[in-house]
Image 1 (cartoon, rainbow, N blue to C red):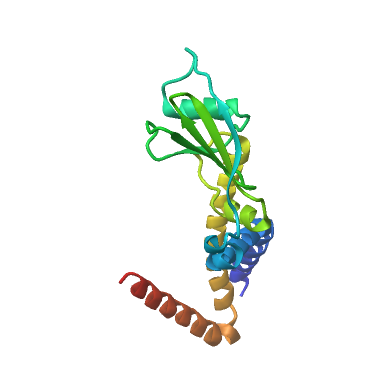
Image 2: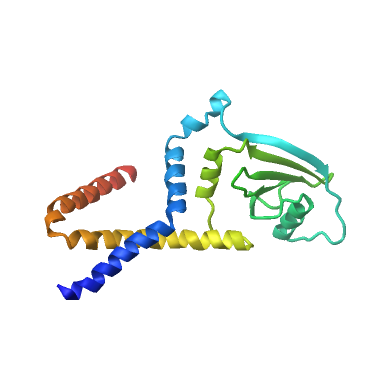
Length: 206
């Protein structure tokens, strides 16, 4: 019995403290997944409800000899000019006219269209801001390709969430296996879940 005591304490600690640490992120992913699954409750374009692209500004963008040729550096220079520096991506072909830049923001991302001839910027924002929109945007926040401590920290925590989920599965199975009185019911749940998952995967792949 004593040889399992150390493992029992370790599995309980891992299961308990990692879940407590990640409570805010699990709430974000749980609520946003529910909202995505019932998106028509919160947004229905056919009825004109929910967030949509709203005009912000349209300004001239003078070019000079210092303007870079690399599309990524061009996008950064444009966002700096607009005081919108932060996480972004270029939509479609960078050489297209207009070049489309999407500035990530949990409260409502920005869309910047750079029209080259004559050089001008058209800025729109996806809103209005709502709890639904914030949770939805946080759900898709990911990756190490963006600069800045905030974005890198969030990316690290996403990795921690994925690793912790595996830990919860392993520790949950371990704790179930260590309780003989619960093995029959727990085993039935485990098998039923595995069979249901397998059936759905096969059906969705057809």
